[in-house]
Image (cartoon, rainbow, N blue to C red; front, top):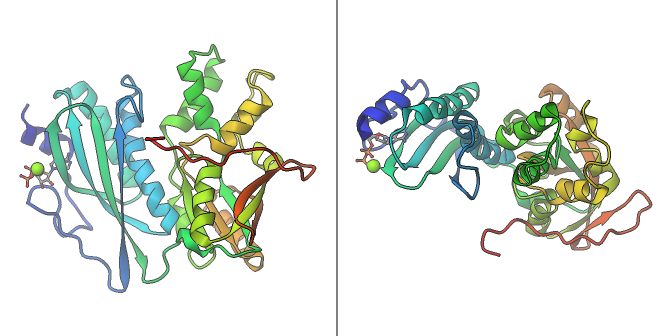
Length: 324
Ligand code: ADP
Ligand code: MG
């Protein structure tokens, strides 16, 4: 199969929203009047972001999920995406499930594949998403004010625990390992929550590189600091509630490390004024997305992590850095 047959078979779909999709030199989108375009790219590289033997359908899901997560963090509604793909060879055993996983998530968000590029090379997946948001209403990293509450959606730390368990080839109960894997390989982008937080949240970011690092970016962009309660955050690691959870399998320090700095969570961290607490709860309820209040924004720069006694934990808020 050649390049064009491959594109036709696995990536060309009729479009409904886009004016023009795959097949011409450019795709054409017609943004709704009064809306701003929100654009973001994320690349997944074999050996760096995923294992070579990962299930291709979950890889297709994740490649788009991490991009939709950025739209969610901006409160933007997904419209369309492009896919730039480097493949070592044409392998339909791989391509079919990859495109299925990718397009299933795309369909569930009404986000159309409108173009891309396909080349031979080491496996590399780069997606660019396009979304729209009413003029001036995008959620930014820079809007947090002293006194605001800090919230996170969903659960934290499980994806990192999964990565460590897979790397160390830990003998975990099958059911537990499966749930951990699911968190690592099939994250849920919080698109609906992001939309519901427009006009409610003062600032937002998606947690891709770990809570403290990403929250640190938000605080820095807003010119403020914060205190986060580690004992609350600790409850956010989902595997602890697991029926086959083996107590003592992982140390408290290990779990705390995963929650605070794990990465690959794709939850939203956001701030909102105290006066907006009811509105935040409503957004959570309406979108059926669990959220937890974990701390408070303060004027003093820096991120402080405290235990249930209010004692400051020694913790280096470092974000994942590919070149550090
Ligand atoms: P060009 O010659 O302009 O680079 P190509 O021949 O690479 O265009 O691609 C032909 C058409 O197929 C274009 O519309 C392009 O957007 C689309 N396309 C190429 N690769 C992909 C892909 N992986 N997914 C979706 N569309 C693709
Ligand atoms: Mg091309």
